[in-house]
Image 1 (cartoon, rainbow, N blue to C red):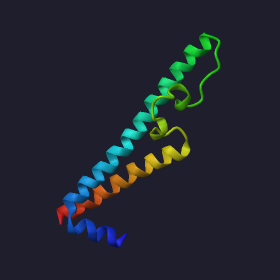
Image 2: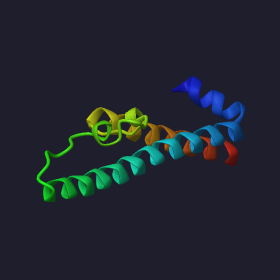
Image 3: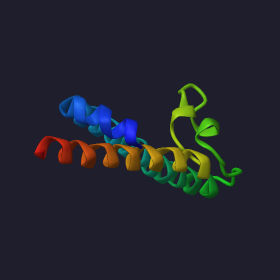
Image 4: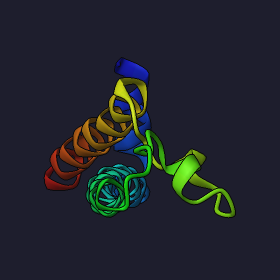
Length: 100
């Protein structure tokens, strides 16, 4: 933790950009997962009306797209939450360094 603070103290503006980038990446992942889950629910509702088996993942619904990036389980959401928290922490430390 001390080396992270010293790096942030040396270049706080760069650390601010990195922190905001991490925060934005994690937020985009979480929002993408929320919209993907809503879309999957909508597809399953249509499939139930057509007497078809429900889909369990985005890869089944959209096999032509790279859906490995969208978090669907606890591990993916944990990684996205860790990105958000790490970005928030770096931004707060960078703001403290800029104020000094």
